[in-house]
Length: 439
Image 1 (cartoon, rainbow, N blue to C red):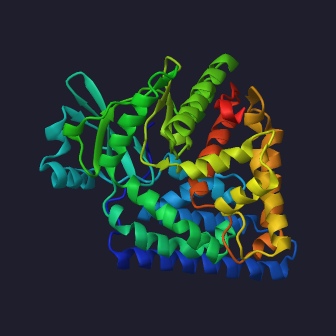
Image 2: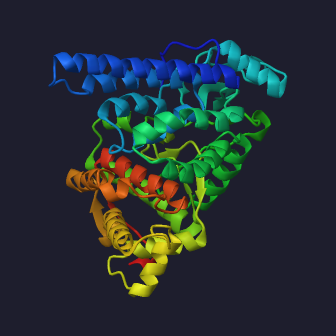
């Protein structure tokens, strides 16, 4: 993929510079609201569509200039089609593929910092412009002898600004996610931990190598090899993987058989990680997958990996079973362990949240209840969206004085919703393998 967006010659790095950018963006958003409500006085039937478009553009432009964890949060929100108005989804999805890249002189500066050499001194050829740019880093294509490399360079200041950026993005997240402060606080620690891990490129190479080896037996999968001698804390050199991202590949009109093959490889990849390794590639957005000319699915980014604790794994998947065999006492304990309910709840609240979360998990578990599931069934996804709408607008849920659900569920749920959305894009029908105890 060639990136044709205008390059940035600098990036705000200090806390003061980044805070100033957020304040400026907040003022723009506030001005958009004032303008909207002034127009609404004249035209009472005016919808919020234009307001959403203006705010989405202003927020995305600001975050794409800042890059880093703030832009990553926007990318995460864009993955859930039920969480944001369409205007935000459309804008924030760009962070998955095509954030404005940094200019070549800044890339050279990063190389000299870690290798005391420029890219041209390390490789026979190196593209001056990024071929792909996302939230944490950008990718250049390089060559050394006959070997082609994808070289990922982390944006300057990203690692040191994770904590401060999350504090700055908090007001936007509260408004856009429709969360109360207790919920946001509950999950922010988990988000911060994962974002800090994503800036550790040496950790990413270790995890990528480990998961690739563990999943090497799965048909129709492909993984890049990492090159430690050409990599560092903020730079990764790996095999260049030829192919197309899912959206581009679908435009070539592949057969249903091929779509099912790619979808099956994706399902099997996640199945093995979750149920055999109890850790999982927890960033299933389209930009992290390439479909190669021979039909294999290449996984190219292991920055975000969620380790799943044993007790959470057992409780979470016990609720997904179609023939839930737990007695009421065991079931109540699972709800407490997964933090869906607590001793602070009234009997009415306990009954309400048990019912809500059983409904949610049962719906999420539907693909597990059959041997083969057709993810082209848009009706299934409409069920998910309608349930999400109903819950988020329910007074009891909105007025809850505590966060609901273990922090471990944040990335596990994100993984499955992301996987389901990718399979829906592929319009794939797959054999939904599951461990024996879950059948």
